[in-house]
Length: 223
Image (tube, rainbow, N blue to C red):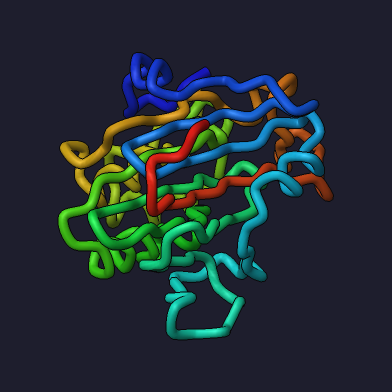
């Protein structure tokens, strides 16, 4: 199932790649490459697309790797070409941002969104466009009333109530922060609903992760 707020036709922009003994989703925009792993040989995926990763703490911290050697936070950015930046995903939402000079990737769980990580990324990136990866959808992301109340205060349209239960639309909240007009693609799968492709913490994959990676190439790559 898909998020309520994003258009399923945007899935057309992502490609499912099957090669080199692995399978992954890929989105290309000029010299920028965005990737999302699947359960099919993720070890090979990580070997192929070597990336900088973080110790993620559900924060609003975004690290400029060109200036800072710290690796604790939930976002990375760079102006360097041929450098891959990545986040680990367990139902949360990876967001890929880019402009003419920078690339950025952020890990958006409910805590990071409430703390303002998408708003912070927006301040770092001028004239940006962005792409959404897969995440748990509002079909499955049930939360307690206190969390729903936090979202209602900032993102009223991202809270769905069904059968006296509360569900959160992570993509809807991020789109409110970053602007729908700047969104160019969304991988519209719910990670919990699609066990053939993705691990899901909510489905029971407690120690498994999906991976999202962004990379900028100085010359147009042959991929």
